Structures are given as structure tokens and as C-alpha cells.
Image 1 (cartoon, helix red, strand yellow):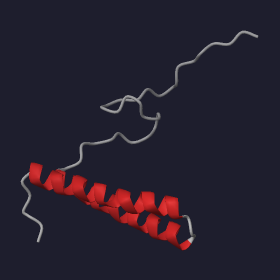
Image 2 (image 1 turned 45 degrees about the horizontal axis):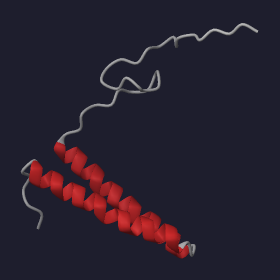
Image 3 (image 1 turned 60 degrees about the horizontal axis):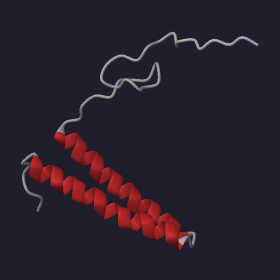
Image 4 (image 1 turned 180 degrees about the vertical axis):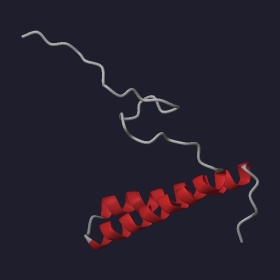
Amino acid sequence: MFMTIARPAVEPQGPDTVAVPGSPAIVELSPRAMHARLLENAALRRIRGAERLRSKRMEDADYWLHAAPVAVRKACALREEKSFAPLP
């Protein structure tokens, strides 16, 4: 059987060259938006950790609960780097 590799009908455009055709382009986030996203990520990690604790999955819970402060440290570093107002 003869097979050919066909190029997709829609080619990705913009900065994200590995995007799935038809998906929205990834835009550069502002420092405040990135900071908010990092804090949201930390909160979601804590929630996952609490869920794992309730289901008695201690190894998973340890991972998620120890991963949450990493996102908070990244958010703090971003604040210092971009000279935001200091956190209270």
C-alpha cells in the first residue's frame, strides 16, 4: 500500500509554531497576569494535595503540597524582577 504524508490544511502562524492548527495563538502575558497565573497554580497545587490527603494517597499529597511553594517563590521572584509593589 502506498502512503503519503499530507501537510495539514491549516498552518500555524505566529510565535507558537507547534500549536495545533486552529488553536488560538499564545500571547505574551503581562507581568501581573503571569503573577496571577503563578499564584493560581500554587492554589491549585494545594487543593490537589488536600484531595490526595483525603484519599489517603500520601506520596501524591507530599508531592503536591511541596510543589505549591515553588510556584509562590516563582511569583515572588517575578515581583522582584519586574519591580512590583512589595507584598504586605
